Length: 114
Length: 113
Image 1 (spheres, chains in turn brown, blue):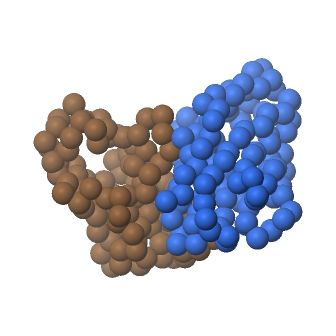
Image 2 (tube, rainbow over the protein chains, first blue to last red):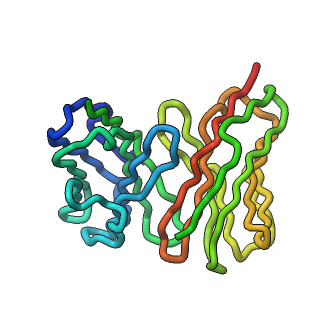
């Protein structure tokens, strides 16, 4: 089966610019996650969707970050405006359902903010 | 909030030898899941092994096994017969009853030929 797809793989922007990341989960997976992984740290959950509804966005900096999952399939994560501290790898993951089901991760998007 | 601590930033192992990675966690929940994930340099994270807290038996997946000590809140990963392909960053993760996954800071494993 096809894995979690993400694009772009790399992005370099200047601070105060906008950027968007795209994720297409594994077909049939209802739950979708966006993580931020700063160099040298473990991934941190930004937002979790169940179908097209938000389950948890408690760690999403809502003044600059937004995410949507229209139609309950693919998702976009946007940063506007970007700050230097947003430089990180943004990982998308999906799982069949919530609970003990395995999360499958995409390759990530490496963002560099200069 | 749950915290996951990996106290070993780096570990090195000779090919064919065994290495053990440490993980401790803090929680007040009684029902939860613990995971070890592997992240090779290509950065695609994959699941290595999973342990349900209600199971006393330690999980095993081929050359990978865990030592789960619930009372001590400890969850170590043992890699036996290490291979060059095992070189990666390994993350310990805790999944709460509310489905949120919390990761440790990771341990980089280097395999010497």
